[in-house]
Image (cartoon, rainbow, N blue to C red):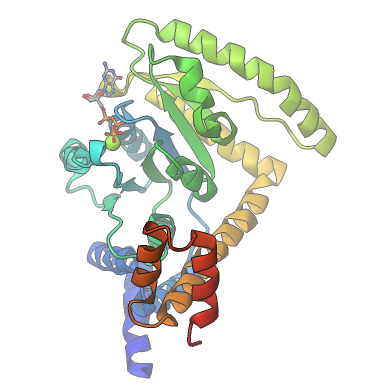
Length: 329
Ligand SMILES: Nc1nc2c(ncn2[C@@H]2O[C@H](COP(=O)(O)OP(=O)(O)OP(=O)(O)O)[C@@H](O)[C@H]2O)c(=O)[nH]1
Ligand SMILES: [Mg+2]
């Protein structure tokens, strides 16, 4: 065991030096999870906290991958070392997207200062949220800054990513019923910067106007809250981009940098870090509690209970109560 721990310490040191092969291996480990990954992350933890994490979310096909690619190029131009994590959408409608992402992001292949990784749900006990946070920590320890995390805003995932990011970009496009897009799933609450991508298409100006109108409604409320809290205020910017030909992307990076400066000046960065740590602990504990509970059930106990629920012999809450009571541990 002591020997084993030593192995991961060595790998961790190579990750911290930014060795590509070590980073790749560490990412594979944390994607799967388990005790080895946990030991490795323990060695990496003191080296994390330096990266600015940018979440990019929005409906499928809004141009997130294209935008991430362009953002990575702009950050490279500014001398930064960029990490990219594409969260593999579990939705069957967009299941093929990652292959496309790989191809589209090939422009950065061979650049040692860009590291791109697609995450899959495979096997990780804590689910995609924990796996993604752990992957961010690996890249963070390896000195990548910023780390851009793309996630499809279809369900809970965009909220998860807002928990993990310092700055969340919400990507909208013209002509998709913009007000509805933005209101959906509380996306207004998670945005730090709005991006109206595909600004080359008709209706971009209307989309910006609709969004601005809606933001003004919420702004008064927010401003009052912020004044009361005595904190510097952040006015949600709306940035138009044409990711496909990188128009507006340098401006978008400026907006992200302004938000990063705001987080520092307001003291919010420290608050976000604590919040992130709490979410992470909750995710881990939830996963471990479930694992222990399932491990304590008798063979086939869950399957039998599920059958009984499906047959209407018992209701789910009663079945769950019984399962909790009958576990060995
Ligand atoms: N006209 C126009 N098309 C764009 C722009 N940016 C991206 N696209 C196109 O929009 C399509 C979707 O782009 P992606 O970058 O794959 O979008 P995505 O949001 O990552 O898609 P998913 O990951 O599948 O949700 C592609 O055909 C892009 O070429 C833009 O600024 N203008
Ligand atoms: Mg994509």
